[in-house]
Each structure stands twice: as structure tokens, then as C-alpha cells.
Length: 57
Length: 522
Image (tube, rainbow over all chains, first blue to last red; front, side, top):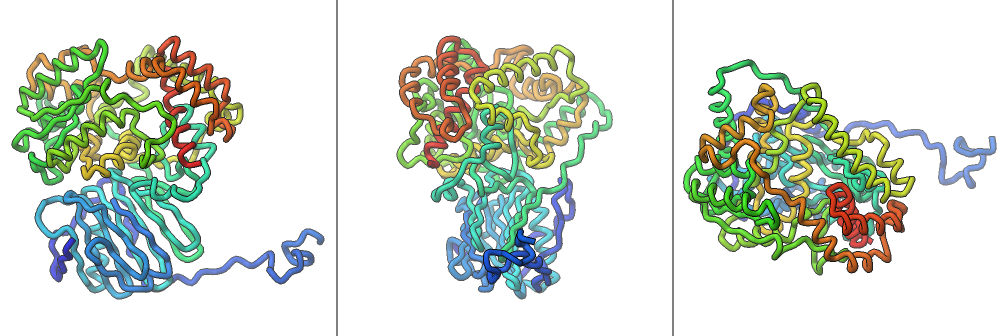
């Protein structure tokens, strides 16, 4: 298929939303800052003993 | 409407059109190549979207790209979401390598998704996503074997998700989220109007639904069963201009003559170019092995062989649009409070008959799973879910033949209009009947006319092939999965062969089709 490059608007604004399409804004350019869940099992724990996720108290 | 393989890391690259697909890094988004569709790529600083959608006119290039500023991008984004026909939109943010996929309202050729680590695969052909091993979802399988209609993100294959109407799937490294839309609004009765005005308004709504997409008589084929739904679409199409090609599956048995008379009358009255096949020449295959090269979806048209023979004829004639009557069954519903006691009792009786037969087939565990109320289904939709499910079932096989399915009676605006009608116009499709009488004459669909039905096809076919089926069912994939009881399967098969009744046949056929798929996936 050939690509047509457009620099002008070729269609009008469609304003109505009769069927409830969720109208989120475009995704933000910047990635959101997200908290990371605290680790309960660390790979350096030996068999998880003694760590927060360990079961030996 | 598209196929895509997207590695999230590739979203850092700028997308470009390579002649067939939007490409970035090693990732590709390939629109379904069809004259009924168009692709628009909109780029701005560090963000872009691509939408594949049904065309409103035949003019303009099938693939377009625009580079815009942030304000224009927001406007384009909004327009893409509110496109008045079906679409599939992907939106990407390069920062953080995030992507979101959105579906339109119509659900004509929906896409399935499979996510592995940071890779997203999308396809309108679910067989693309089941080439690798996949497990069967026990709960979904149990519901389907009990003949429950499901329309949900969750599918028969674990890890494969259907993007249902208006749903979105967002993905970023290490994280994926699926969102259903809010439920469609409840139907409110329409304001009263003069008796003839209803018919005029139905005519307008139907014309708009048929006219929403470009129509070229030489490229249009129409499924014409001899029933009211497809006849209504045929009348709507001939309002637009020249006659189209009509396609019909001719039935055997005692509904054959009424079907022939009605079809002939419609074809003659509307000047259609008619093509037909006999169901006896293309009976459904009862072979539990998939045909060589056959691509099985999670749902399959039961009468695929006969339908495919017609669709192939349409393609050979140069047609690329297939108009269907899907959605007609859902246009004139009864509301619960309106149902007379005897109708409600009939529905309940039929449901009990199916349940009794399914209970004989299912294992105790599957019975329990099928009786649980499920909370994973998609919310109420503008297009009724049974119409959406029917479209999803047939569309991939239609699309593989180069045809684009058009279902005017599944148009959400037409559905809303009809659902709001006063009861006397919905009951027994009274308004549609009046429309057809006005277009086709009083005699084509008289009150209480004998409807054509496929109901007699399977009982006879199964009775004729019972030995072969019993042989094939010595091993049973669904029994190995703990879904069905193998002795129950044989008992059900024998019951259908002996009695040829509706309820056991319906349960057996659902089982046979799923057994074929389970063997194929294994």
C-alpha cells in the first residue's frame, strides 16, 4: 500500500459519544513514577530463612 | 482488524510505514489489507497512534500518515476514539515503552491478545496465537459445554484475551492491564408517535445502517436465507441502487419448499443475482480431526462447509463485501416483565432440557463450574452480546476469503431504536414484518409463516455417522481433561442417534466441536 502523507486535516471533528466510549486523554509523554512493592523474599536470603518472607519466625 | 507483534523495547524507535505495516525496530503492526478499511498513523513528539478502521467513503489513500503538534494529536486521538464505524487503535508513548490497544463499538472482526514477558501479540485470527502450547480454561469450557453464551475477555485458551467492544489493554514493562468499558445505558421507551411514523423511522434507521459504509453493487454479496433478517438487509441494500449478488444455503426436509418459494419471491422482486448451494452437498464435517491446513478458532460456525462454499463463490465473482442478517434476532427483544407466563415457562423448560442433557455429559467438577455464576463477562454493550459473539465466530473465516463482513442489523443505532419500540411493534417482529410487506408484498412473509431452520441437519447426520463417531470417541481429549464423562458421551451419542431430538443434539454438537478443538490444540 502506498502511504499518503497529510499535512492538513482531512476530516471534521466528531463530537458525539452516544455509546459510552471511554474518553481517556492520550497517554502522558513521560513515564509515570511508580512505587515498587517492598521485597519480601530476597534472592540473597538463604532459602528465605530469617527474611521477612521466611516462615521460621 | 490487524495483526501485530510488539516488543515493548522497540517502542523507543520512531514508527514508519513500510508499505504493508507500521514498523518500529523489529516490531510490526499489520492492518488487515482490505478496500473496506483504512489505516491512519498520527505522530507527535515521543507519542504516536495508529488506527485501523472501516472506511466511510471509498476516496482517499488506504494508508495515511500525519505529523502533528501535541494539541492536534489530542484532537486526532479524540476523533479516532469516536470514529462512527468499527476500529482498532494502538497508542504508544516512547518514554517508558508503553502501549494501549482500544477497540470500537461494533466488534466486526475483533482481535485477540497474548502477552509473554514484554512482548505483545495481537491477531484477528486466534489460530496465530495458539501455535505454541496452550491450556484449556476449565471454567470457560464447562460453561460452553453447558451451552451458556459467553462474551468476555477471558477465552477458552488460557492466556489469550479477546479485546471485547470498547475495551482497552494497556501494557508497559512488567505490567499489563485490561479494562472493560462502563455498561451501556439501560433502554428507555421511546416517546409515542404516530403509527406510520414508526415505520418511516425504521426505514431511515435501516437506510443509515446500510449506507454507513461505501456500497458498490458489483462488489457486494448478500447472505439470503429466506428469513426476515436477511430479507430486510436485501431490501435496505436495493434502496441504495443496483442489485447485489445473493447467496443461499438450501435446506432439506419439510422446510425446503417454503424456503425456496420465499427466496425465489425475494430474488425476483428485488432483481438479485442469486447463487445457492445445497446443505446436503456440503454437510458439516463430523470428523474430529481438523482438516489439513484448517485454522480453528475458539468458536466455529457449525455450517462452515456450506457457508464457505458460498463465500468462495462470492470471491470468485469479484465480491469483497459480505452483507449478513446477523443482529436481526436481537433487534426486537421481549423484556422480562412483558413475557406471558406460557412463554417464560417454555424458555424455562427448554433451559431445563439442555441442562439435563449437559448434566449427563459433564463430570461433577465441570457441572459445578458450569453452575457457578460468572463475573468475568463483558458489561452490557450497545450491540447485543449474542450478535457480537456471532460476529466473532464467523468473521475470521469470512476475512480469510478476502471478504469484509457487514452486519447492518448489528448497528448499535438501529439496535437502540428497535429496543425502544413499544411492545406491540417488537412482538413477533411486527415492525420488521410491516417493513417487509411494504417492500416485498403482502404474501412473502404472512403472519405465522413457516420459518426455515437448520435444526434437522445434525440429528440426521449424526444418526448416519454414529458408528464412525463412536470409533473416533474411543479416545476423548475432553475426558482426559476431566471435563466430560466418557460413558456419558457415548450415552448422549446413542440418544441423539435414536431419538434425533433438539436438546441432546445441541449439547452433543457443542461437545463435538470443542473436542475437535481440544485435539487440535493438544
